[in-house]
Image 1 (cartoon, rainbow, N blue to C red):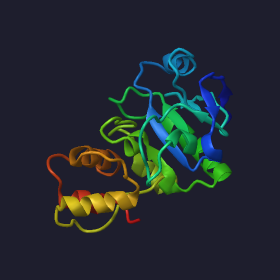
Image 2: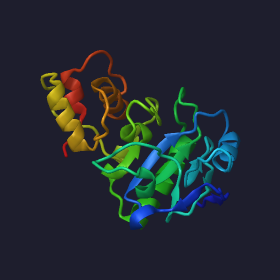
Image 3: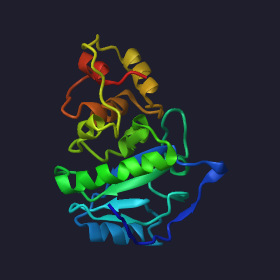
Image 4: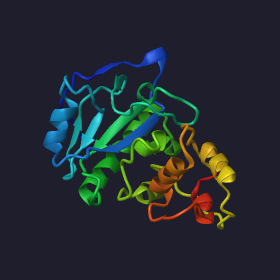
Length: 216
């Protein structure tokens, strides 16, 4: 599925010779793709992403993949920071309060394998903004269908173990092994893990939260 080129001025070189090893998914939190596209290309705003996928499945590319887009901000994943220099950012036209439609998901499923193949990025390295910035970001949110991507080998699926005792120290260790290495509170970490692997989860830490984390 070809992307429409729509250049953004908001980019720079990747630092320290880094190349993409992650793909970070976002939602725009705006009413329309047109408004999001204008914002991502506004030099006064200083934000961008490599790709924007509209609700109807239209794909725009704003930044060449070998360049550093400004989409992730502060955060950590798998012990690494400067996520912008290590990643390709994909924005999805969605306010965050409604499901992601099939045309948009099919477009994402078309573009992801191509990016993953070009940069040798595996499913475990396709993450959400909330994964690398717990407590600060919540996108792509609880309505995003991570399981659908996981079934196609385009993202990591949740664990399949039986529920374990709800032990926060053990939970933190398992979350760290899975890549959640940002320095955040227990509550923020639990929220981030649930957004990714168990969005229906509520209340205090449970054994099901530990079981949902994938094995390292």
